Length: 477
Ligand code: 6PG
Image: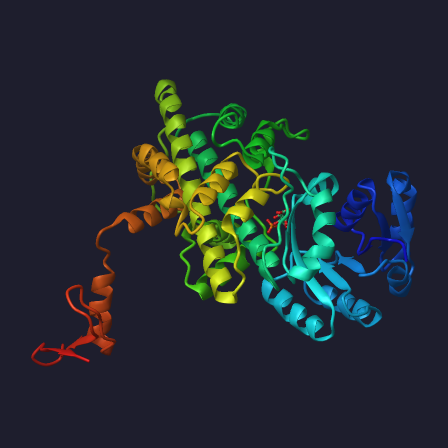
């Protein structure tokens, strides 16, 4: 065969990745379960490069040079397993199957292991950037063996987004499920970013008294500063949009029930398993869940609370600046939590992930791309073993400068009855880390009281238990 890569599954993501490879000079074999999609791709975009349409998996495999690279772009879950089972028997030792869907990393670990035993490389790969990214340059997070990256990496580097300094937004994240794990956390952070932006909007509207169009302008201004990011940019676009049917702001006619495909939820489930506090990300997932429980919300409308008091115009402008501070500080914490999860996951699964490289490949192409990630990259470059993003002096200084406003914003939200779970949870995390003493000591006392669960002391080593039901003598064990 002569094709350097084969793509099976030509829905929009698969089609656009195939086009991206072809536009970069690769010969791309293409296959889809229903052949019409394959024909459509070739007739609509055949002039962009060299496509070899295949009507069967056998034909696709035959048209590939060795080692064969088969990129699977089908729905996560059972459909992915089915396609793998179709292709694996046709492949030879050293060939690779690349899964570019949003698979759960545990599925990827299972598939990688099973295929490794059959001599086939399985490369679970995170791909971020939506349809546009897939076509013009996504951020790519491949896992799998180092050997497979040797054969695949250069091609991915070619089609990936490039950071401002020209670095391709792709790196070998680590073996087996590392790529999909990191993509999962990317999405968890994406949920947090979106929720925090949503809270900022709600406060500007209900307390600041601004209209959606005015808030769009505020976001546009923020987007020229340290909050410069894809998500802030599109938020301004959405807020400025007017519904054609009613003439109302678009944001006022959309049903306020957020949906999800599950990657944010997976992030939190994994964080719970790993014991990593990702409260900002978790609140973002829960906020979507709250919004979706329409009956519960309807049945709760009568509950008492303040009516938000809109600020006079002069104070509103000051408040907007404070909200910017809160949003930035909360964002730092959300990323701190996400990177912590990657560090612990990497340790747990033995991936040796390089946090600085991960920040670097998120600088362009992906949904959470932002000027901010340049800063994160620099922070990890300066201190590779950094225990927390907040250990970076620059971020510590920025949260120090923001914290008064951050507290004011959370307090203002509470007083006005505007829910800001993301701002509040990230601030509580920040204060928990700072606190010289936590009430965890009391928790330990309670556990020892009702269950003789024992505790440690601050002043000497050992494990202790107090005889709470008796004379309260302390015994060391
Ligand atoms: C990306 C996105 C993408 C994700 C959508 C929808 O990085 O390109 O994360 O992979 O599927 O954003 O996610 P939800 O439906 O869960 O909001």
